[in-house]
Length: 345
Image 1 (tube, helix red, strand yellow):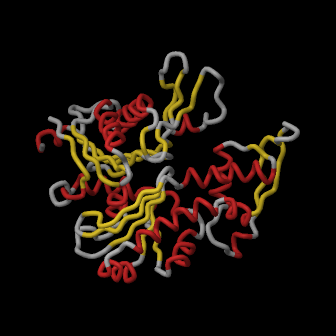
Image 2: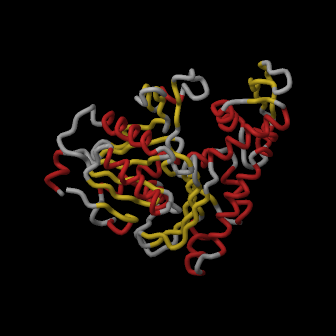
Image 3: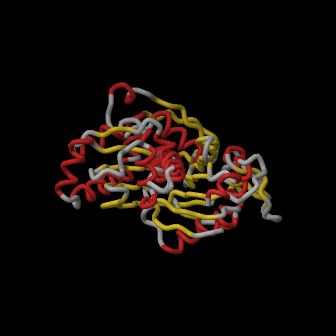
């Protein structure tokens, strides 16, 4: 193993529904791109991957399809996912590497055996020598700097694009975990549906995401409840472009259903917890990671609902990929964090 790693650049990958991040041993996080591929419909050849492809979402002619190969944290389009992984792995290596790398990939804790194999096969097809899988909440906890190897309870909530992972960790393992396929994408979808229902306005995914980021919130707050935003879309009745002004409390209301699913998953995990670990969590609080942790007021909402102090990780978007990197760099000491591994050369 030592011989190979001298010549290959081992990498940790957070293969997310919304974004893919790559960590390379010795270099840190070297890539953060949207998980989108634009392909030529007739030849099935990639035209753009990542940011370039995301800009095409909702704007492509009939001959081009902009595809998000992951849904709910797992591979929905195998061929495109492999294409995307191959592109990103080649990109971080500048197109060349002497030996295929060893790869650690973060996966949702609720994946099935078939979904797990699809991720392993896609990574191997993209050129990985060995593939190791690590559950995303474990990786997120490592990346957020929680002492997961100690015999104390640590609670992490990782709100990604496709899944929300809730886990209680101790001694490098998951004592309790729950994975719900409700996360950032559902929050965005709920805004799209609200705009249709209340304002008769059809908006695209990119616009809904922009609304969520700019004026979305999870809990009332005077500072941002006064904010409004001009939203452009197609009016359903006239069929013509129209601009509508929406207020921050409206956006919060539109997201209340998916937010309550996330909070309920967290409460269920807390209720199932052994008393000793519950005492640790009350002491240490709950750590939030993932892009969803950036939603304004989500820490206040969770704290209000559970009565436990909530912390947001220093860099929530990078927690999972930093955790895969930490697992790579401390392979021997952290061997128990891997959910499974597939041998290679």
